[in-house]
Image (tube, rainbow, N blue to C red; front, side):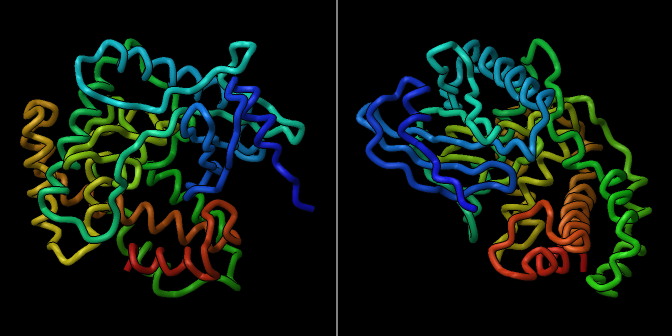
Length: 314
């Protein structure tokens, strides 16, 4: 049974009384997002499903948001970020009758990039991620990982092994690729002592006049490796006709233009291998979810997760 959402009530609780319209916008894998147009301007209204979050995770989200807010407020950079509204009682999250939690923040006007990108745009991505990493390095404390295993290959491999009885959905080719490649990727060694975005794809950046002005979807902030953030961002830039080496070079040009000391030369030399590891990890996640019956990733059509898994693993 579908439940009608009372957006007028929700926006009113966040002290935005005059709602004109509220329409779905492209959602991620976790939250449902809506664009609320009001007399006070445009806002993003997000539902955090109670089936996805524990009470402890919701507290982590708020704590991480406060860390990011402090860092942004003390930064001299021209940087925008989702600024959560508060309810009339001073809360950042509102719990509805279904047990779901809602938050709102002003809509950030910017251009999202996807698909075929130019070298200049990829260089801007590198600059944008370096600016973010510099900002995150000023955190007074480490954030708590709400989703601690996003880049954790060992964890995802164990989840894959748990699906050993999903024979009706199993495909020989990805299974063979996983067996052949897993140990090499697990043996890669590099630093994981930084604060990172955790889901550093191009779709989580907003651009204006050729530069990154904001990062969105900050729920994934966590301790980790800058190399993995960089590799994930590069992966998402490799959607067009440009060669992988050209994308890496353009990205590094932008990243190192902002700060050439965030990474050592030895770490930069590892980047192509980390890129392959990130692709493999994401492919493993898609394939494992396919075996489990598509419990995590939203599919736009049947078989989409398997299709993505094959593209990333094979």
